[in-house]
Every structure is written in C-alpha cells, then in structure tokens.
Amino acid sequence: MKRVGAHVSASGGVDTAPQNAIDIGARAFGLFTKNQKQWQSKPLTEEEIARFKEKCRQGDFLPHHILPHDSYLINLGSPEKEMLEKSRQSFIAELDRCRRLGLVFLNFHPGSHKKMMTEEECLLRVAESINLGLDRTSGVTAVIENTAGQGGSIGYTFEHLAFLIAHVDDKSRVGVCLDTCHTFVAGYDIRTPETFSKIMQAFDVIVGFKYLKGMHLNDSKGGLGSRLDRHDNLGKGLLGLEVFKLIMNDPRFEEMPLILETIDEGLWPAEIKLLYSFIA
Image (cartoon, rainbow, N blue to C red; front, side, top):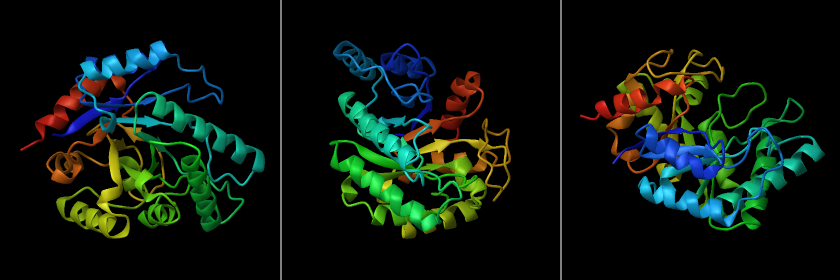
C-alpha cells in the first residue's frame, strides 16, 4: 500500500498531529515533535505520549509510516564551535524525543558549511555528529534528507548521501529521505519515465534503495539545477505531475511515508486524493 500524507501541525501538543493527519485523509504523516524555531522544548509528559500513541493506533499509523523532522535551527556540519555543540545536543534530544513517542525515524537536513570550510570537511563533521547522536540514543534511525544545495548546504548529490552513510558506524540506524523538489533543483531531471528510471537506477547504485525510508512529495518553483529550495503545490510548479504518477505506481515506494510539504495546506486533502487516483 502507498502511504501518502502531509507534514501536519502539532500545535497544541504532539498528540494533536495524528488527528490532523486523519482529518485530511492521510495514511502517513510528518511532524515537528517540538517548536522548530526554538532550541528549547517543553518536556513530553507521559499523558501526552499516551494520547499520541492512541491516536496513531486509531489512524492506523505504524511507527514507520511517520516521518518526524528535526528543528531547522540545527546544523550538524557547522564550522562554528558553539553552533555545532548546540546543534548536536539538540539533535540528541530530538532523537530521544522520537524514541519516547515510539517513533523509529528522525528526518533531518545534513547541514551547511556556511562557505567557511570545504564540502568534504563539512560532510565529515556531519557524519561525526550523526555517530555522536546514535551513540547516545537508541531505537531511532537518523534519516538524511537530500537538499536543494542552496547556499552552503551539503547533501544535494547522491554521492554526498553515500559519503555520509559510508562514514556512519551503525548502518542499521541510518537512512535517506528523497525530496522531489530538492532532487529536481539539485540537477536530477525526474520529469519523464525515461529520466526518472535512469536517476532511480543511479540512486540505487550510489546509495541503495535499502536506505530509502521515505519521500517528500513537492512540486518546485525553481527550475532544473536552479538550487532554489522553494516548494509548490502539485501540478502548479516546474516539476509537473508525471513524476508523482511514476512514484505512485512504483512498488519500491510501498509502505513508506510519502509526505506532502506543499505550500497551500488547504489543498492537502485534494492532493492526497489526486495521488491515489494516479494508481493504475
């Protein structure tokens, strides 16, 4: 079964997120388990955790159908010592927060060199940060999201993802999330059956499908290779609908969270229905 959903609000507490997913007809969902714009977080209560798990049961959301995202403040490859330490501590806290909620993934952007170090130096620092996080936590897989390559962000090539995985000690707890918008603007033309097939074959050779834990389904305001990280609603951007038809009919994407992060949340119920209508 395809598991389509969206990155829903957890305003009012994480236990509100599953219901928000149910309300839009989702079979998977993403969320922030804390305020993504603040370093500090309100501790989870046992009651909140119990409500979250019960709502997930009601919505038939298993742990591997849920793709939580860490704070946008975190930069695991930061060239600045204070920011790096703050990011690592926050990353560890978010991994443990996911564990307490019974979740098995934490999706994150690998980081940015801020034009103060080389890409390889930054990649090595991110890998070190991931190892530190995994060493100090248990049960949760660190899911690296490919990026658009905007500014000093790393992780925009399949080779970057493979490099990070190669330098993570516990490969049973590392994975990848592919964002369709990021993939396209990073220079991978996934708009036609022929190019999509070639690029997915390259991904399998370079990274490996066994590491793919989920996807973000977004159209793109930026063009091919533009490095512009600006999402659009399905069919309204420069990526088009064909790639989403291909994903929905590809058995390699079964039972993983396929999460909308499109810009008009009001369209999410219609977009979920549209995606399921593509299944032949």
